[in-house]
Amino acid sequence: MRRQASPFAGAVLLATLAGAALAGPPLTTEDPGVLAPGELELIVAATVTGDAAGRTWEFPVLDLSLGLLDDLQVSAAVPYVTVDPDGGPSDGDVGNPQLGIKWRFVNNQRLQLAFAPLYAFGVSVTKELGGIGDSRDVLFLPLTGELALGGDWTLTADAGYGIVRGGRDSLGYGAYLGRPLGSRANLYLELHGSADKDFRRDFMNFHLGFDFELAAGLSLLFAGGAGLWAPGGEEAADYDFYLGLQLVR
Image (cartoon, rainbow, N blue to C red):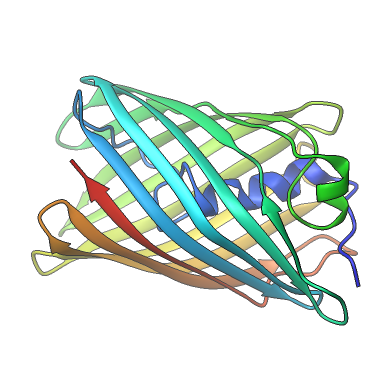
């Protein structure tokens, strides 16, 4: 069985874009954090998502970010996607490449706010029909913020508008709670969704994640979750997992 292109592909792409790259790995919600000038971050990750149609793997996902100024960074990411449908042959190829920039315009001890536009390049229609990615270019324009709640808890949230070339524009939104676990780890609980701009077709997913510092500048990232709901005719994800290594120099 081959996966077919969705009639509301923009919302589908926004539902999966940042889960693998250019978000706040290991989560989908973008965070307002910015690298220091000259600082380089490399994340090598793997993801797997399963639903009634089969499984989709992304490995490797390469995510590279560079700090330019005190409150400005640029990012680029690309996944290699393998689709493993039930009842059919698997297929693999490069998925949607992504470029992003993040400008943090508020930064104090209690609140951070940033504007983080992201451009995802479309793949070929042949790839889309095979489930490798989305053939439509998408410009996603999110605002993201982080608020210190006290008691070591923080709330991070984003919301943005996706301009889909040749398709229906979409919305993306999410939030997560985070807190430290000792001096080397952090725990996160996330809800993240996407929808067509009229909200008639929407997705919602949840994730539980953590990061753990293995050594100075090297961290392990993990998140797992599932889809809570999906629009009629689409299957919510039975599960999805993210595992990555983050190197900051």
